[in-house]
Length: 212
Image (tube, rainbow, N blue to C red; front, side, top):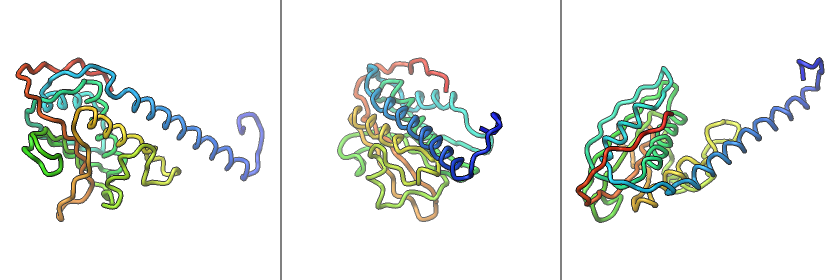
């Protein structure tokens, strides 16, 4: 408006700014719903979870102030590469959004045998921990529901679709996603994705990863 030489009252400018914010948020919701609908569309393949996640991480772009360290062990899992990419994207984005300004992200992947969090059987568990304020325990189940965000819409910290996508990926693969209980000496949230260990012996090299 200013470029056109029009001067509007502050109240009108505030309304226009609010409309713009709501439009941007709606667009993000639509994008999130589209990604949610794509889970499970690509055929699954047996792959080494640690190798595949490392391959995805090499394509991730982090802010200059962020630091990421990983310790990923081997484990044969059955999942499509697009779904694994979405899962890693969600976990990293969540850590960046909710972490401190100088984000410190720790990623581990290992086989857990008969984990009480996942039930019977062996699972390859991917864990991502940030250094933010953490997630209150009363919200640990709620955050995996679509369109649920613990922040006000004006905060621009997501629209509540990321963890719903992660949960759908986990369930589609026969696994589970959850918030891990933090230890007393560590801050931040730890999000976990458990994928059943495949009993197939033929492990394929991860398919081509799209550029992030």
